[in-house]
Length: 575
Ligand SMILES: *[C@@H]1O[C@H](CO)[C@@H](O)[C@H](O)[C@H]1NC(C)=O
Ligand SMILES: *[C@@H]1O[C@H](CO)[C@@H](O)[C@H](O)[C@H]1NC(C)=O
Ligand SMILES: *[C@@H]1O[C@H](CO)[C@@H](O)[C@H](O)[C@H]1NC(C)=O
Image 1 (cartoon, rainbow, N blue to C red):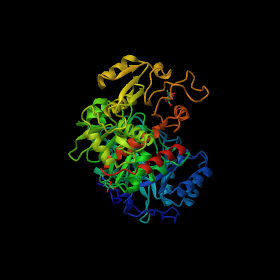
Image 2 (image 1 turned 180 degrees about the vertical axis):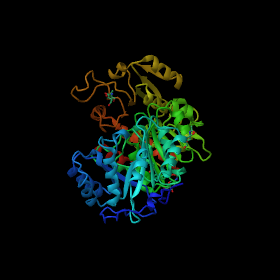
Image 3 (image 1 turned 120 degrees about the vertical axis):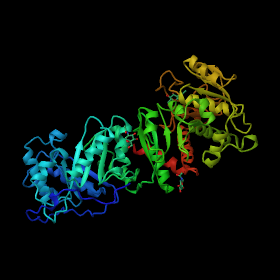
């Protein structure tokens, strides 16, 4: 599948001898054998001094290559600038002088532009990028000497969409026929399915291919270029804008997504959502996968149409998904098999591809939160008695998942610390629903407090006959009391959020208060609950727990829970 060699294009131009090559500093020093996807930084400065600085920055950051975008340079002098740039560049450079008619900034004479590109060959640039549409004219005036190692990238850009598979294959074939050493196709992803199609181009081409889908929805085409054998992918520098929409950070390509150690056998995991760019899950899961040395990579998947996405992604490669808003309900219908509790909740957050290709659905939101609450209760009550067998949140996930799988009936497990406790759930949205079902499953007496009573009643009816429904006021005033308070909504205790914090009336009766929110880790509610003497459990435990359980569902072995917790905490300080 992956291209391991630079295959020379069929161009006869390469044999044409001409002026002797000038010994140049940026002589192509890439070897003929190319195993790793190159990580390239586009230099898009408008001033030469700044371009030189960006080249240095890219070199220090460990890029494999830089693309010198001459068309961005406002002070470009044909006679001096290119030689200066190539001379000071220790990395293999791609010289690009993108024409306006191909989406670039060069608007002058086409002859002058092509002359500069030919100059780049003469100066020994490692790569020169020429638009496919200009290939004939470019080659017509080129006298390549035998000693010139410059590789010609023929490129084609579509800023509107992504052509169909057949047209893309034709374009790439044309490029090699026209003399390309490397073919480059950059399209615009209207949907993540476009990115999935683009990823497959290198695998069926006759030579090396750079295939990228631009835009937010094309991100995976950049992140998974290593697995699919792309010749090169672009990353931007910290604080830089990159040269095209959707470019990820070079540091993320190197670290979190380890593009260069991806292999065709690398399994893909990911979080399906919309929006999804701010998800911490990639940071968490990749940290855990890398620590365990698992040959997988976990990516954000910006999905509009879940069933279409699932149809378009290659089964064997995409092994599991976290599912987040707004797809948690739709995901249920996409699963071939659903864990019974997830089915009753009516939403899932995990899809796992089993070996036979079937998709199994789970909901680790409720089990993680309930696990953390159980843990908190047993800490609060000591370890004696029938309450002692609650699983600590760092318990072997093995057991946790068996529990998920075996929770088939409205469990009244006599062993959960939640059994027979009065559990107040504030909110009847997705999280409220999952937690109400989860608590009931553990034998708790559930009270749903929600502004929209009809919604709360529907949820209560779905759970079972003993569920109470109240307005939030009843809870906030302390008229209705419970043992455990679970907050899943923005409904506040105070009429004004910035009212001075202090011990809150109505909280004293609770043994434990849980807040699904984890930014900040100690919310106002948790501060006040602690002041009122309640045990508190933060949403962080739920977030870490759901990721740990997903990790285990994806992998089948125990998750490094503490490492996951550290990764979330770290991502909270760095983002
Ligand atoms: C395009 O190619 C992808 C795989 O590369 C395939 O899943 C899809 O069905 C193809 N689409 C068409 C219309 O042939
Ligand atoms: C529940 O959490 C939200 C978000 O942190 C907060 O705005 C709200 O006040 C909390 N509810 C209570 C009852 O404290
Ligand atoms: C699970 O993790 C182990 C390493 O801890 C790895 O060897 C194995 O391949 C992984 N399994 C899957 C299905 O990813």
